[in-house]
Length: 351
Image (cartoon, rainbow, N blue to C red):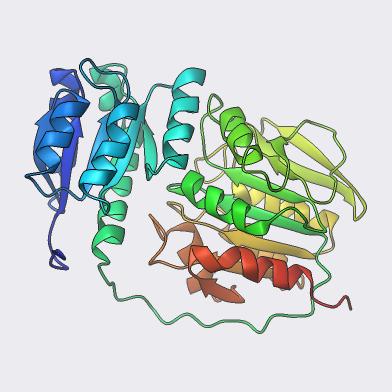
């Protein structure tokens, strides 16, 4: 049954710690747009509860007695194919790998697993959790919003020298879809900045690489960029570029965060614009905030192009919405069509 458009997001919390269950519930219920409908201690209880209680989102711990999160995940999706599952993952290499595997198996996203009550009280954790829960519930229920009309720019005949991708909240799952759709041959280097902790970025690169399309790895300072390869910004470092078309080189910096982020999308775009004389194609995916707005504006004003993921398929229409509503986009479209659009734009006749 389709939920009413003004209904609160219905959430189940599954964690073996009663303290963590209670703390997460308090965060979620501090927002009038969220209702916690169940709190359970293991995966088996979550599966049983989902069969009798409607939930839009399940916040699912990974390591639990009786039934762990990875075992419960496919059973939850079988019990309710529309439910969105957020994995609660520890900030460890193993936790990151499990979270990425879970997303490839159908989980919608992840949040860093609180290690203590102090962690739960962190403002960033609370904001991230609420944004993901509300965004995923909205996507499940297809709640329409009143969005300002977006004016699109006519796409120039762009001889792009670089594809630059920015993403944040909801980004990993979106990146799996985009990279799979791009296929194995793109005639330019691909630079990618995803807001993510340092523990997680090498695991994200590994999982993107396993998709069998474009090779992907964390960027290394000073390496030359090759066509048809994805260079991911490492956690806690800005990825920038220097040189000239045909001899572009990655640079990593620990300059101060921009837009409260490191890595940040703006330094990547700003330096790409300078190195490629504006001949850059920007793809902005789901994400909170407006990181990438200033850099995209610089690229578009220099003759480059930008496309944005639409609101309906974005967990949070912050970053793509910012460039769309600023009138900087040549296309605003569902995630599932973005790879085809990018391939077509990269095949555009060279001026």
